[in-house]
Image (cartoon, rainbow, N blue to C red; front, top):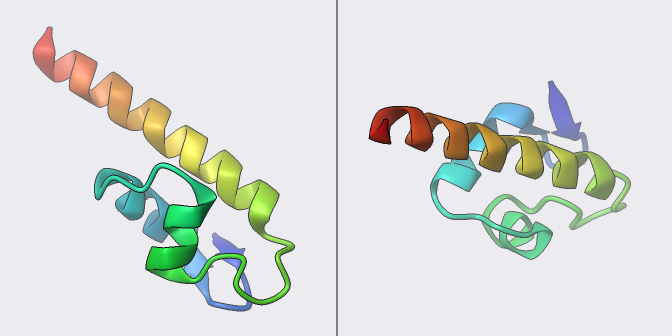
Length: 65
């Protein structure tokens, strides 16, 4: 699913950026240009980033257990 239409950034790209240590919208903007144009994607991008970090945390926890 596209999160940022202006820059053609997908949910998958945000998840990949999270794996590469993107922690904030500022990081996503630096890495993917999210919110660089109109900014309407900010809320959805934040949510995707939160979900990505939750998935990473649960995956790391499963590996450690």
